[in-house]
Length: 378
Ligand SMILES: Cc1cc2nc3c(=O)[nH]c(=O)nc-3n(C[C@H](O)[C@H](O)[C@H](O)COP(=O)(O)OP(=O)(O)OC[C@H]3O[C@@H](n4cnc5c(N)ncnc54)[C@H](O)[C@@H]3O)c2cc1C
Figure 1 (cartoon, rainbow, N blue to C red):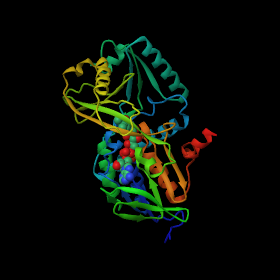
Figure 2: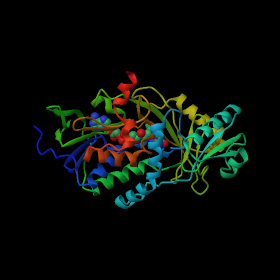
Figure 3: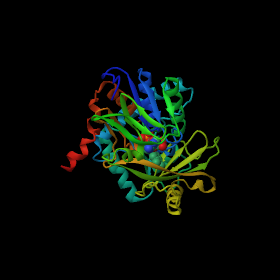
Figure 4: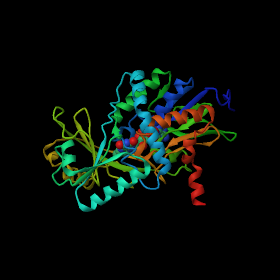
């Protein structure tokens, strides 16, 4: 029996499955609004995709045809980031190092120049301010770029955060707001009673709550098989840079890889996009492809040491957009953020917290229901 189930609009209790950026941020927002929140995580908080990401905030450069609803959500998230980062820093004492210094998408061949022109046309259609640069103008901004760079597109509004600092900050802010975190606790199933989801069954016993949020990233379908969410493997590596003379200042995109300079002296290079289930091996082909693409853009990486390699699993849905929806009475899903989960963290947290507390779906969420998949199939 469900006891003391709080009516919508009253904070009540919430249990959240998964302590990635999404689960922690939703938990933080709910705890701030007076809910009694417990986040349950099978490992350590923030060690899933949110740890593996590159942290790019790329609503502009990642715009793709046919992704209108996602574009508007991404754009809103880009606008939410500065205030979110400031508030998070104050609440946690940890700076997630938001940098809004723009991204450059570069072209080395005639074919790649044509693709950049198509991207520029798409930006114009979506209202993204992007600036066309000649190869020389691109090298003025980034002197280490190859002389073979023929053109570049600069999107000034894009940027990056340090996603590993982000999850540390979210964890601290969530705890400071009164949230409870249970790590090293495997969730086996959703708990249901009388047609309601009433919490989670975990390795350490049942965890009951008025409302449940599923934020288990790429693993979400294991707990709710109706979710069309699968792991999309990404391999990445980091090179070491001399912080006083960084190899790059902007995030740079090539056709097959991106390069992300961090304040801590790492130059991230990512990422492969593979349908390989939960395979977590770095492969020779993966590393070779990333290094070759990065070296064509930035030949000076040749002498840089490789300081880290890793693999992560993006939570990919069938249309690459998240599911942010009350899918059953008592159960809200916040998963499937694929390649934009770090970018979407502030906005997901705010909109999902509102949905959980008041049952009110912001109009922006209309494109992110679970039902969109069945209606497409029909
Ligand atoms: C290589 C790579 C590069 C990326 N680059 C970017 C980028 O530049 N910008 C961007 O915006 N996004 C990027 N992403 C995407 C982004 O990382 C994800 O969309 C985002 O981190 C998803 O967050 P999440 O909290 O949903 O998932 P996760 O961070 O994976 O968290 C889910 C958590 O749930 C836990 N969990 C799962 N099942 C259970 C269970 N049964 N019991 C208990 N706990 C469970 C997991 O242990 C995990 O901690 C990238 C992803 C990858 C892999």
